Image 1 (cartoon, one colour):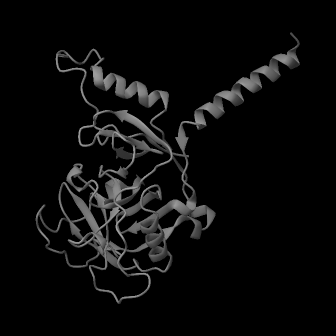
Image 2 (cartoon, one colour):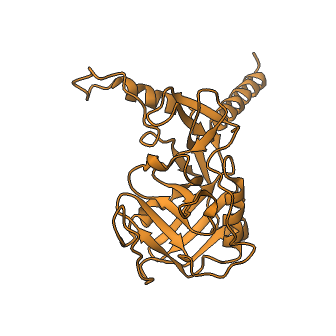
Image 3 (cartoon, rainbow, N blue to C red):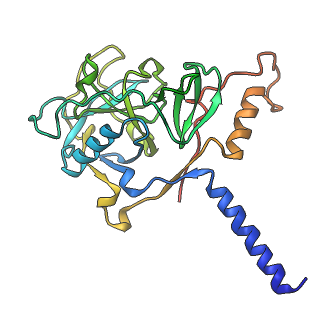
Length: 280
């Protein structure tokens, strides 16, 4: 075989391997990245319109209109969520009217099954790297409230979300699944959110006063920023061989560290075993 032919084959194999590798990652576009600037640093959230497209549209609209500038995280509950926005102190407009709830969707492209039954759902898995669940009949899908997930807050009635949002900063509040419109995942800066001063307890509605520590300086969508200010990420898909190996080991406790394996195979908590995020 000639040297040229060998080089060509090597190049083809490299290209094929690279393409196969990329097939196991989801790369959000800048139009789907929300940059939340806080006094302690930057939080970046990847949005997904897989289940709640109208809530994504509203959040982008509010960010681009600079609605969130100089607002605050007025409800930060230890082990639960950080909730931000105007706390209702805004005028009604076309961009602040109540939204129809989008707790579930009838279809979801890219759902990858991990567990049947799941811990808190008939079937659990991921939609393009976002933790999700579905029914046995696959006729209803929803994103789940794992740490780092973003959703719209609302009042008691379901169709009351307007502008307020929350990010899960503590344990996974899975009792909220199918009761909130979830539409994003933090890809950078979750530690920044976790530094926010606490303003109450789990069942408390106590609000924090706006101050320099809990202020939202601004929220900008990535496609409105200069290229030098943009950051790029990719989210591992659940089909990635490394992820599949990871949950296989987790199920079977297949590691010399584990002395007692009588309880294996163990169920997989997708909120504990979320897919990986890499900055490019």
